[in-house]
Image (cartoon, rainbow, N blue to C red; front, side):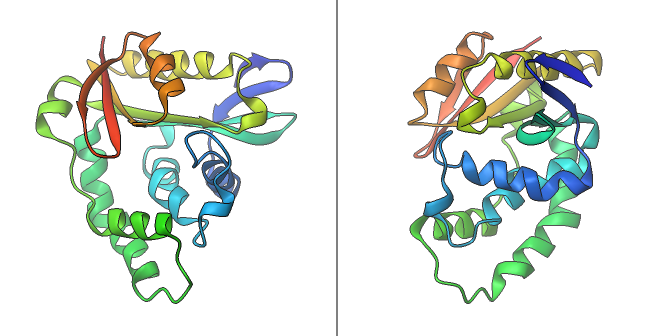
Length: 204
């Protein structure tokens, strides 16, 4: 366990953490702000972006707590190629089946996520060659601005380096300028930009 100060701590995530981690994902789904009202399929955003790491890459999945309540996470994969191959075989088919006959009313963002789920691809070989690891981090609004994220990212980067990684990449929404500036402080650089997001990378 890593002490973050002021009754905050970071520890390896456990499978029973997943419901709380999905809630954090939902409450940060609007570029770091609470996205609860934007989805009618509230678990889907976390089932895409959180659960796979806790299940398949537990050595690089961390839960952040304040006063023993999960309010954030930092998640990653050491070898993106291997991780994505595993998900394509063992995880995505089950999640796709879960939502294949969805009868709930869907919001525009739900539809975007369902489309993303059905078109999940492997990360570009050009990126994983130089930046084989990847990560992402979220902290609910009440826990933001206290320096926790900086410590969490540093910890994850240190773990990647200790495990022999030569570089790491991450995805950030085009409109999330605050996050982009945050990552620049760690010397992440922009690698490419799509219609919805940017990919940033850092070599060790």
